[in-house]
Image (cartoon, rainbow, N blue to C red):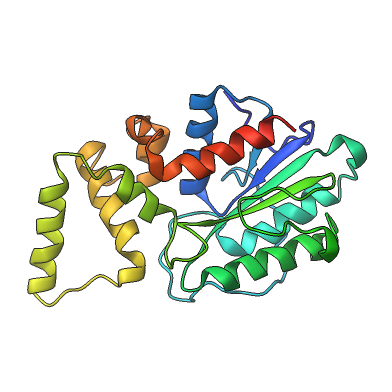
Length: 236
C-alpha cells in the first residue's frame, strides 16, 4: 500500500486536485503493484495556499479538501525540500474544467513558479515526460481536447454496468421536470448517483473508490493513458 502521509523520502511524486483523484490514483497504483510513488494531496495534510492563476469556475461544486488552488502549494512544498538529484519525476494532474488548454497553461505556470523547473524544460506535450531530471509530465482530464473532469472518464468506465439505464432514466426524469444538471458537472452528478447505489446512499464517490467499489473499472480503456503514465513514472 502506498504511503498516504506527507513523506518526502520518495523520489517520484504525483500532485493532483483532491480526494477523488487521490483515492483513484491510490487504487490504480495498488492495482499496478507500484509502491515507489507518493501522491499529494491527502486530506490529513495542510500546506499554505500559494496564489496562482485561477482557471476553475467559482461556482464549481466540490467536496474535495484541496481543489485546483492546492496544486501550487504542493509543488512548492516539494521544491522547498531541495531534493536535488534524488528527485526523479513528478506527474501533475488536474481537470480540464471549461478549457483544457487553459488548464495546461496554468499547470505550466505553477511548475515554473514553484522552482521545480524552468520554462525551457517543461514537457512539450501533455501525457509526455520532459527530457531532463526531474522528469515532469502534465495530464489534463478527461483529455486535452475536451471540457470536463476525472468523473467523465469514470462514467465511461461504468458504461456496461446494468444500473446505467436506471441512472440515465433518473436524469431524464429530472430534466423533464425542469431540473437540469450543468453539462460540465454531469459526470460528477452521474458518479454520485452510481456511488449511492453501488456503495452507500450518502457517501461521496471518493469514499466508494476508497472502499474498493470501483476496482472492477480500474483497467477500463478510459484509464489506459493514465495507467501508462504511472508505469512510466515508476520506472524513472
